[in-house]
Image 1 (cartoon, rainbow over the protein chains, first blue to last red):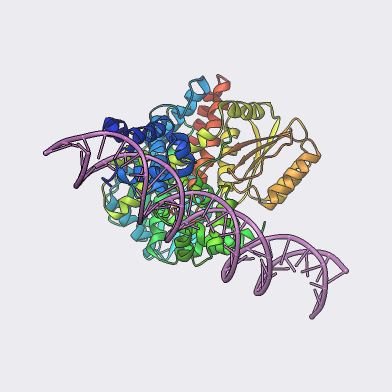
Image 2 (cartoon, rainbow over the protein chains, first blue to last red):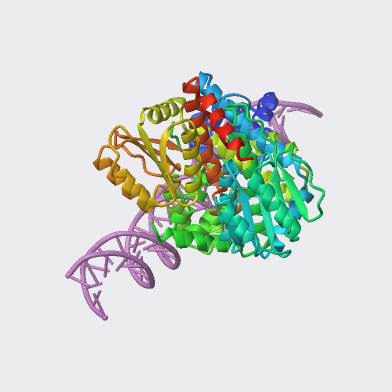
Length: 283
Length: 283
DNA sequence: ATCATGTTGGAATTATGTATTCCAATGTCA
DNA sequence: TGACATTGGAATACATAATTCCAACATGAT
């Protein structure tokens, strides 16, 4: 990847070493690099007042394979500079509404990166292992976490996993009664304090049902060997208690688990496509 | 502000609408966009097992002038994403699992930023205006969008808005029958093609019920004055049809709308806190 | 089933664009 | 001034892209 670092700066640097006609070509490129990408070698030749073959010779001289290569290189270079500018500057303009958008963006991005950093790769491996091993899965999440839990459940179902999820905790507890050590209970909660989840965990412990937890950073660590925890971070500083960042962080984990799980078996993408095709018939 | 977006996300978005051969081409492009930039149309044709002319037709179909244009566009796009990835690059180590995490992170971050860029601040203002003005709101989203829709609904409900949302489209249509011009129908869908939503929109048009749409970049623009559209971008390149990026983009919009809506009235945060306090009693 | 109609995709052709060759003009130095 | 190198263009050869036209297939109505 060390070939041509920056064609444009290279051109302007070596400008003085070029012959008369080559300068004209170089000048034309420097003047409007973006324009070149839509030209033919003939167009450019005409614009520079040189012959078409001179254009080709010029391309070779600066180390490119030919004229199309010049166009492609320039296009990439323009995109790189532009995007660098954007990322540091103007995704957003500077009216008040845009400031809010900016804050939300930052809050989500940091929830994502912080959460992914917080759990090691091994943690994720172990969690995926547990999902794979489980014969049946109950996913339990209340409040804001209910949506994350049903999203996760529907994704796993698409992959052919036997998953139970829903909003009624009582139903879940009833289902749990038929579960055993070969199954898995997934508990999603930021605070780790919801009553339903505590009851379910208690029951699971008594009956040796493995637990995969998804909690916030402050929930107490559980030393029980039959339990495994992934953690997420989220600072809710835009609208208190809105759970926007929390949900972003939780989805980062469940989505990653889903992707890793899907990639473990080669035919998984096909299964999703099948499921998608069935849905498409409804259109 | 609705300028043509990312080619790669556009391809993965419209993937399901393509014919068999077109999919093979699209797949080849998505698999190795960088590779395309050094190929001829013949090479690519051979690699896809289709004719050279099909490649050209494909390029035209996706709105490009021809094959060289495809190469140039891809090259620019790769450069853009690469430079974006470099900036966020150091979060992760470099084992394969971490590479997956990195990709997911990049995909989510770009879904966020692209989506926020795609809609102007005015667009968001208008949308919030419509939410504020509405006496009652029905939020309709099927499939993957159902979760976004119920999330949005529950948030707005917390703020005291009269919102109806749920998974049963028939129930929604029945409810819609009692709606009028002072109410609002929110339709969430990436493809814009779901049958239930089309029926609901049709009915709303006939009865002058305002519509707020949340669609993907390819859905057809609706000129009906009683309708307003926000768009989201998402390239689903990790696990096809998994809707991970799509949902990230949709939530970016609904979350932002929620925040803006909440900030319009000073006592809104208090209302959320109230609602939270009630929930806390369950613990 | 059958026919009309539309859509998709490929073979062959044409058009366009790129690269090479070869030669003339110009410049450089003994 | 003459040998030699360098530059650049005209003509040409080559490669690639785009179009046309037709066959196969799908779709939908009768």
